[in-house]
Length: 226
Length: 218
Image (cartoon, rainbow over all chains, first blue to last red; front, top):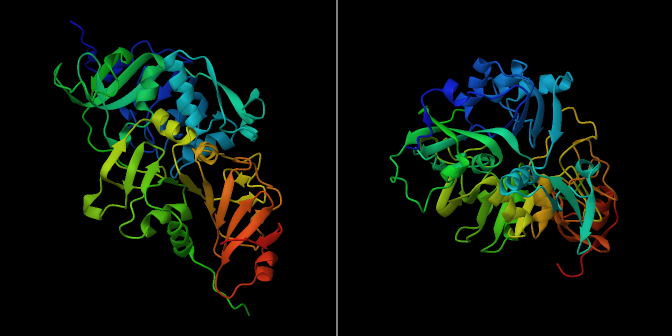
């Protein structure tokens, strides 16, 4: 019997190696797999590359990983948000490498990785300093920038509901990057707030089919706080 | 003494909203553009997109109806109108980059007479840069309008010959709504559609770096 549920955060994170590239779902405070992210502090991994839209806020989740010096590099679209003081201190002190990526390019690079497309051309950022060192090519006279797929060793996602096959749904704006990250990593780990029996989730409304998901841990923590 | 009164931020937003017809799909940037949603005339259906995965964004919730799972791209709590939808980030930016949005309204530091936009960084060595969806929106929306103050707090013009700050996109801005005027970006440069009451083209030119002319039809 297939059962992707594990019983603890530690079990969920087993085998996540040092220097891994991690794809994190979440946008602002919503849809963040904060329990899994903070679980990485217990496993002792370091030298991580983190792919995420934001660079954390306050002292939870990614901000804690940053504070404890576990992150070598951030690949991020909007690191500076209200409360991102830990990021700002580390980056200002030169203790953190940052690759700034336009938000849609970040999403599409992960989508491409999950879809087996090694690179693509996008008009976004053409003619700007974010494309300064990149190959560009004109299509119909419009400049486009070549971008490479961005895959992860591990994706950490937050779902609303999951079953034992790893089928997932999300809650409102909590969907954001989560389904995209889930497709783009060799090991996708989900934390879920609710659990359904197999067959209980409507096949018409499953957002992430279980083929993209390796492990699920049930963590009913309630509403995101900001 | 001047004979005119500058529009405040809400009035700039209201002026933008006047020009958005029913049925458009619209993304609003952070700042003055966000206020546009609150000033669309009653009964006119305009569908607002938020790049974090929402269509049909409604007004801010009453305090007792706040839903912590519903935020917009500025991380503010919002509501979802009947008919609204959720989708993931890759689909959201497919809508943007794929030319499905009728309009995005963005804030800016500077706009050039050629329609170049600078709104994401104040220097090439910003201490903590952040770009978000600005570059995708500024290249992908079918129309790009800017809502901003006409000059900086120290009086420096924001409508310029050529942007001094790092570019967000080149040649994509079509119209600028400021506290003083509405200005089109045309192949021949800036063309003034209208100005606040009492303002003359000479007054406006004094506050604008690039040359202005009156639009032929406004």
